[in-house]
Length: 135
Image (cartoon, rainbow, N blue to C red; front, side, top):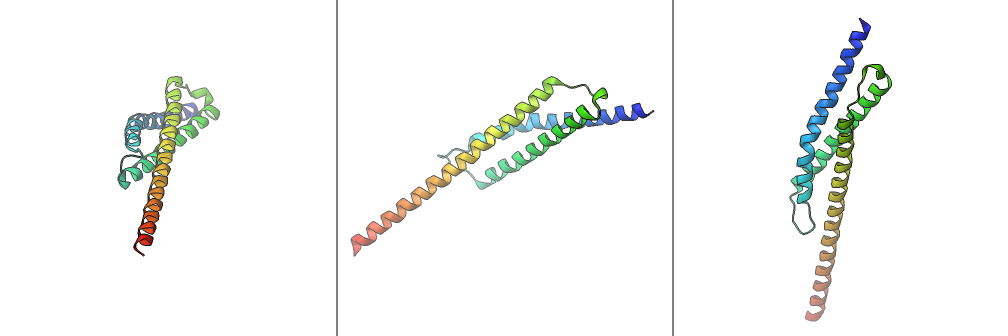
């Protein structure tokens, strides 16, 4: 009787992993598309940037949930758990793709801020030169 209950619990944990995997599979593509919109030359609405950050947090939460469930299954419920190596590899790839895309977005945003700062300094120096020429 106890084995049956444990087996059902393992199956429910595997369903959670599968649901998160399915969510990630669809969301990763959307995340990559949004990340490609961010370039230093293009003016990007703040809503897109906030949406990217929100998606990144959600994806990271799902990935950490999957990892913790996998650790539990591989430790405590090892005799009842059958690993899906292909799915596990894809989940690891999702993590690296998301980290790469997000770090690229953050780098691009810092680049955009630096460009704005340089342009402001240039405009202030032009105003100073114009002010001195009028005097």
